[in-house]
Amino acid sequence: MLQAAVKGDISMNLPLFQTKYTADPAPLVVGDTLFLFTSHDASPEDIPDLNEKNSAGFFMYDWLLWSTTDMVNWTEHGAVASLKDIPWRSRENGAWAIQTVERNGKYYLYAPLHGHGIAVLEANSPYGPFKDPLGKPLVWDQSNWYDIDPSVYTDADGQAYLYWGNPHTFYARLNDNMTSLKDSVVKLPHIKHYQEGPWFYKRDGHYYCAFASTCCPEALGYAMSDSPTGPWEWKNYIMRPTLRDRGNHPGICDFKGHSYVFGQNYDLMHLDTFTHHERRSVSVAEITYNADGTINEVPYWLDLEPLKQLCWLNPYQRVEAETMAWGYGLKSAKMGIENTGVVADMPESTGKRDMYIFDINDGEFIKLRGVDFLHGAKKFSISAASTGTCKLTLRIDSQDGPIIGETLISDTGSVEKYKTFNAKVSGAQGVHDLYLCFSNSEGDTHLDYWQFK
Image 1 (cartoon, rainbow, N blue to C red):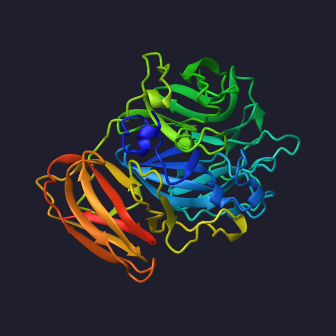
Image 2 (image 1 turned 120 degrees about the vertical axis):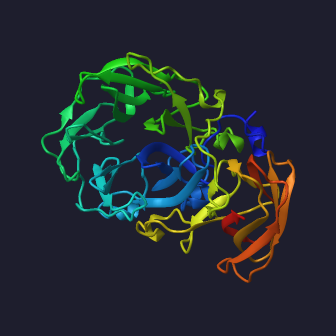
Image 3 (image 1 turned 180 degrees about the vertical axis):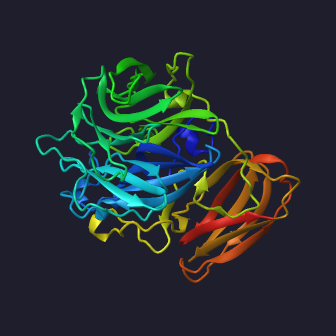
């Protein structure tokens, strides 16, 4: 069933991102855009130790950022920060679950350094660059290793709370600067089924603590309270345990009149292998609430229909090549920054930077859902660089659907030298899924952006 996704039959609720392995989803809504921060499980080629490339363990060096306005087409923004941005860290591995929040026009990224406390980075934009204002942990109880999975919630009175912990739950009140504690750390009474990955929020007068439930396999559970400090009452599973998964980690938000829960699985890795590695992928489901505030349980990700698209994609504006609903097999990177999993070679947080798609092979494609061609497109342009050639065929409705245009991306002299390649377009009117299909690929081709006219 999953293998059909590789061939383009992607009617299931598959993982959101395919260019990288992702985990620990943390949504942040800013205006009409939903930003999703994730941790990043390294692919084998990004693990520096040759003896560890096929290890089942965690190899996590940086944190990633994605965005959407329609919930189905996502734009990748690459690494938003890395362990290199925390110079006092004690390890070269362990970029675990983060959360980013906004307050007074600034953005604060809370990151665990397992066994070495919780850091906070700040920026003037969700894209960064993120900098360490403290030069030390915000929280660190040196008597234990519980200080992971930070979650921050700011109540209506302006008081911000920092929560964290595995297998115990802790909280502390933050000062208005969001980078210091107002008072001492409090350990909460045990919440039934709680394991790790807390996510705190408030909705319609109810306080929620969602979390990964007792391992293993972990599920998505939640508790409710009338106060941000508890007491917390276990309510139910959002998604109950299943042997199809091992771990989980919730991120929950309201966006454009809908409520969503993000979590993680191994479904993307399972397109390649069922031999276990910690190479996870992020998925999302819409959730609904009852009158008493309780959450209706949802099935496993793959048993759900794909999400409803919230607005159509406009093809008559610049669309980045790294914007897609599906692109299995492709890779992405920031312009001018070599892909690497070695912390010492990583750049410090760069802020927003143009990205490109590469590692393009025959039979691969980029799918975009719900593209509104209105009364008809006449021309397609794409910015690309190549040391060889690559045929690009534009299709609608499916990977084998009607052809609306074709162009040959030819040698530009260098993968750093981008040129515009054009195609005449016919038969593209109204709303369709769009497929950019690749064939006859020789040499290396990089894609920057595209646009219809």
